[in-house]
Image (cartoon, rainbow, N blue to C red; front, side, top):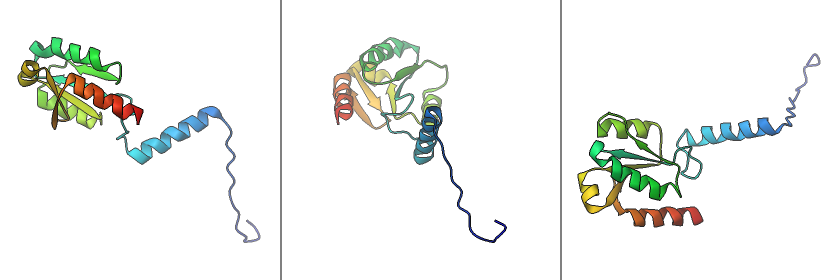
Length: 130
């Protein structure tokens, strides 16, 4: 000010849209795009090793879409490229399906753990009810 005194800025904000946008900005900053599963725009993706596994991938998707926002990656990229691309998109659950999974009627989640579809379904339900 002209009198060399400190002035304190005041910000008055009163709008529903602005509040929503501010909340999203805070969440994006806090999580750096690595949203927790409950708020992630896409919670899971199914990646197959080839076209011969697409029917099984759709079966898995149909079972899990009751609980997760899930898609099947049908792109013509290699399995490794699909995993890398979806990892860069920061999707919480990357489900891979290949010959072993088809034969054993299992899925592999985040290249880490094999599940029967029903087991993973139960885990997702338990996570949602906590």
